Amino acid sequence: MTRRTKRFTLTIILCIVVGAIALGGVYVSSIVKELQGLQKEGESSPFHNIEHIDQEQTIEPPVWEGDEVVNILIMGVDARGMKEGEIPRSDAMLVASLDPEAKKISLFSLMRDSYVEIPGYNNNRINTAITHGPNVAMQAASDLLGIPVQYYVYTDFQGFIKLVDALGGVDFEVEKDLYYVSKADNHQYDIDLKQGMQHLDGEKALMYVRFRHDAMSDFARTERQRELLKAIADKMLTSSSIAKLPSILNEINPYIDTNLSLNDIWKLASLGYQSTLQGSEQIPPMSLLKEERIGGAAVLTVRDEEELKSYVKDVLKPADAQTEEVPENRIDDNDMSLEESSEKVTY
Image (tube, rainbow, N blue to C red):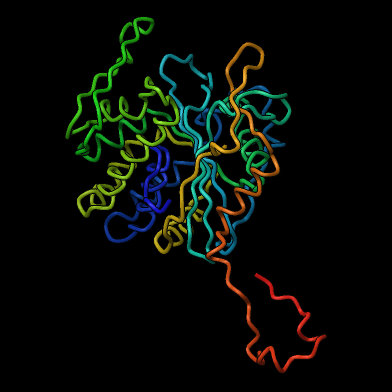
């Protein structure tokens, strides 16, 4: 896939990146302050109440020099109705892989019901990993994909609402009537959107990305989220939105936590500005996905874990991007000796 579509949490990253690019002029001090505030510490961190996190043993992110592949776990949660200090399961999980050499970005959307090993906590749905802290979530994603995950970005759905409202809403064509009523929640989370072009504010945009009550459930919801995020990303890049970056960042700041430093964000900004989206893939892909019931619960398992890791590697390094390395002083094959012709050509 080559479309620049992303789920709502990736739009938060776009906001950070554009904010870093926009550093300059009268916005310098305010934008820097907001970007620095994205990395929460102590009681400001949403994870400060997790019993199993020992601050002395917390994994420090690597020093990123800006020239090696970096993988970022992006998590979105719905904390409405949760008790203070309680960590909800992640509703959306993506891994963004940025390749500075190829100037490519690859996105992996992790199905939240994927049944995997949660490091230190036995097997469970991957969306439970974040309840044990970001380090556990990063390791679970890394084990599933077969690539190192060095960074995370964690955000609440409320941050998404604030972002859309700060942008002044977004014009978007809803593909069909979307309706869902939840009496159990006193109709607090009801969804009612009509087919056709709509101007979505934050609340209505959240309805759209949350809806999964049709035949394809989460599979269809993923597609809807990507389409809406494309529209939001396009609006984020307008001059009027860039001019409002300090206020936009201020609105979403309370709902974001990350281990990315200001310097890391600056490097990501430079890389993101030069890069293009290589593709966006569902993990596990349909060909490797198996629906099962474990412990009475419906979950998704992987048919072949090693094949999945190979699939991820193929996405990151497509065959058509692999070029033959030809020596500068290469001679015609007809003039080569048998020994010389047996040398391997690497790809």
